Structures are given as structure tokens and as C-alpha cells.
Image (cartoon, rainbow, N blue to C red):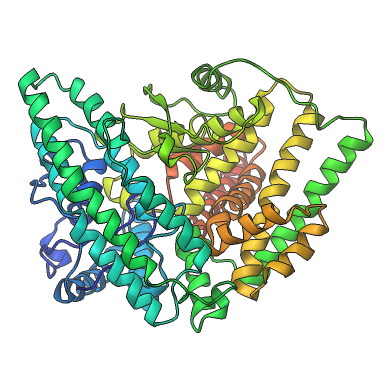
Amino acid sequence: MRRHLYKGIIPVIFCLLLFFFVKVLNRTTFDDFSTDFFRHEVSQSTISLHYTLADPSAYGIEKTEATFGLLSEEEAAAEQTWLRETAAELREWLNRGLEEEDETSARVLLWWVEGQLEADDFYYYQEPLSPTLGVQAQLPVLLAEFPFRCREDIDIYLELIGKLPEYFEELATFEQEKSALGLFMRDELLDQVLEQCRALTELDSSHYLVESFQERLEDCDFLTDDQRFTYEVKNQAALLDGLLPAYEQLSAKLETLRGTGTNACGLCCYDDGLSYYQYLLRYSVGTDRDLEDIEALLEEQIADNYETILYAISEGENLLEEPTSDRSPAEILSALQRQIRTDFPESADISWQIREVPAFLQDFLSPAFYLTPAIDAAEENTIYINPSYETTYVNMVTTLAHEGYPGHLYQHSFESALSPARSVCEIGGYTEGWGLYSELYAYDFLGLSGQKADALRALSSLNYAVCASLDLYIHSAGWTEEDCADYLAAFGITDAEQLHSLYLNILAEPSNYMKYYLGYLEICKLKESYLKLSFDHSVCDFHEWLLETGPAPFSILEDLLNKEKDTSEISKIFPQLQECAG
């Protein structure tokens, strides 16, 4: 069984055998082509389909047997054929000439397809079981939030849980194959994964997947009380027969691999590891910059941040004194929704809710995250807050800005206007770069003096810059933990436990800090270029341009901006020509 597994909110890559050999000429418009592309991709996993579409039938997709998207050898080969055929079709569409919006979509889709083809070269370098972004950590949240819109959804949910042992068996086999190649995780990371797995195997009436199931059933007005009771019994049985043995068996098989992960350094210490890291920068972050350029960009930003911080201190600013408030997260998010109106374009009116990460997952998940709603159910917006992280008022504001307004929730409201096919293409640097851009922008919403807001923003930016630099040095230069300690000591960071935790995190999630910080820097560079195009351009205009353009690798965004530049220069000349003609 050939498995294509990768990280993300839906951490599997899937395949559905559709009409692989349909030619461009048989699809009369690019819209037909992109619709077929979209159907192919979202139909390949039940979870992917359910989180992407509330009503698949409206898109011509029939619901089928529940699946996690495992591929046989033959299906994997067919998927590669489909990708090559699709790349050829996209090139033909681009050669024909398309309207501007369709051309952008075609370029983004081609970039994504080429990335999927190249990913096969690094098949065993991917890690589906990383401590933070791995299947074992994210799947419980996805199951707990799995919407029940009709009885069929509940039946599919229970069927998925029943198939977890088979799915986790394949994950274990994949890790065994990685181990045989010397690519298994080090023992400390294994311990974190095993702790997560064991936390899920303690089943009682207060288990998160029991309580969340009951809560969702309560909202199902299409069920009778007797039907709810029957489903609760079925859920208990599914958890006992499916989820528990799946996690137990996975834990047992992973334990047998202890000691086989011997690489204590980054990706570059593996034979093709540096090439894989460069692949991640290109297709996970979305940047075409080379390693030297990235290093120079980070060093420049670190110096700028330092200068801003030191100047504020020299002017008497107390950066340890922060504003406080007893406002709830919901009140803070509502305030942000109002505060962004000056510098950010108006968005669709959407609803949202804030929930806490379940107790048994708090030690393993991020401080906060946003669950993207189905593209045809934009009202289903949920932000998770992890209460295990100690947080200040400033941290809560900036975190909610990252996840909510003007961050991911707000960002996603613009993406709903794009071709559905674009939703398939995950571009971490664009998405998380915007999240961090929003987070740092929120320092302007704290009621501070401009100088203090700038200094606190620079302090946060410096933290991300240092982490991104370590990501670069660990995975491209093979820095050891001792090398990192020497580097951090220059910034006054000497806490050995903090350093060790950071080092493990970067080892487990290569390029993850780059998605955030390098993505942020790329957006800042685009903003600088955009504002230089015309004195009439405002920051709000830039935000509108970027959000309405939608997720794309930064090379494509730069090309589109250059077209804006050409148009701007023509418009400067045109009035002069009119004046001469008059």
C-alpha cells in the first residue's frame, strides 16, 4: 500500500480515480476544467470533503464510502499520471490565453500540481506524526468538530471511527519504513507522540469525543430522543472498537522503533535532506528566495528590530509595562472587528464562536488556531483558545488578531469569492504570513503611544525572527543544540530548558517558523512595492489587493504587482497625452 501523507489541517493526501485522460478540448471552458480539478481533489478523503463542502451534491459530488484516502500502488501510480496530465492541460490553457482572474488561478494550480509531483521525490521525508501538526494530535479536534448536518453525516462519522485501526496500521507501517531508512524521529519526539496517543485511550463518560458527540446531537433537530440515545450507544461502541485500539496499536508499534532515530541535527544531515528543506521553502512557504537571500533578509530584519527597541528604551519607554484588561476573548474579538475598519476593506458579515481546546489536548496543541469552514457554509467559524498557555491581555489581543480579525477568519471571508479550485492549494507563507502580519498590526489597537506600540511589535517580531533563523540554520547548516545555545546567548537567552524545547520543536516541524515569519516579510515587501506605485495608494488599498488576489506563491504575487506597476505608469502618461491632444 503506497501512502501519500502530509501535514496540514487535513494531514493526508488522497486519490480518487476519475477521468484521468480527459483532454482540454473536451472541457469547453477553464471553469469546466477547474470544477473537475476541484471535484477530484476534495473527493479523495471523507474528512477533506466534509470540511470543504457542506453540500457536495451541489457541486456534482456524490457521497461515497467513508475513507481516509489510502492509496494502493496502482492508485498512487494513477494519481501521478493524473498530476502529469493536469500539469500539461494547465500549460495548454495558459498558452491559449485566459482572462486575468482565470490566468492567476491557472498559474497557482500549475504551481501546486508541480509541487505535488516533486513531493514524490521526498516521500519518506514527510512526517505525518509530528507532535504539533501530526495526525494523532489534529484528528481528535477534526472529529470533535465534524459537523452533523443530517443523519448521513452521523453515520459517516461513526464509519470513519471504525476505520481508524486500518488507517493507523498504515501510519505505523509508514513509520517502520522510515525507520528502516534511518529517517525515524528521535526518542524525545517519540515520547511526545506516545503521550498524546495514551491520553486518548482513557475512555469514560467525560471523554472529549463522548461529550462533543452528545453536544452535537443536541443540536440535531432532525433526530428524535430515541434516535439520539441510539447514536450515543453507537458512538461508545465505535470509540471502544475503533479509536481506542487504533491509538493503542499505534503506540505499541511506534514503541518498537525507539532508538532508531539517530539524527540529532536537522534535515541537511540526511542524504537528500537539504533538497527537501528547499522544497519545503518553495512549496510549503511559497518563496523562491535562495538560502543566502533568506539569511540576509532575516539578519536585516533582526537589526531593524533591535534598532527600534533600543531607540524606544533610550527615549524612556518601559517595555515591561503592558496594558491590562478584564475583557473576555469574545469581547476582544468584537472590538478588533470594529478597530480594523480604517485600514482594512469591508468584509462579508460572518458569525463566529470561540471555544477552548479540550483538556487532554492542551499540552500538545498550539496556543490558538482557527478551523476553516466549508466554502458553502461560511457561517461555521470556530477559533480555539488553549488555556494551558499563560497569557497577558496583549498576548490575547494579538493572538485573536492572528486567528480572527484581521487574521485568518477575516482573510477566509475574501477567499470565498475565488474559484473553489483555489481552496485546494495550501500556501503556508501566504496564509500564516498574513496571520502574523495581522498579529503584529494589532499592536496599533492597544491604545499605546506610537513609539511604544512600534517597540513592542519589534520585540515580538524579533522573537519570530530568531526562531526563523534557527529553523534555517538547523535544517540547512546542521546546527546542533550547542550551536543554537551560542546563538541565543547573544540575545540574552540562556534558559537551557526553553532552548531544548525550541530545538525539538524546530527539528519536528522543519520550515514551520518560515511559514510565519518569512511569509510575513514577503507580505511586507509586497506592501512596500505596492505603496510605491502611486501616491494615491493607501495601506487599505494594499490589503484589499492582497486579500482579493487570494493565496498564491510570492513569485506569482510579485508578477501580478509588476502588472499593476505597468498599468500605473501608463495611467501617469495617459493624462499627459490627453492634455497634448487637447
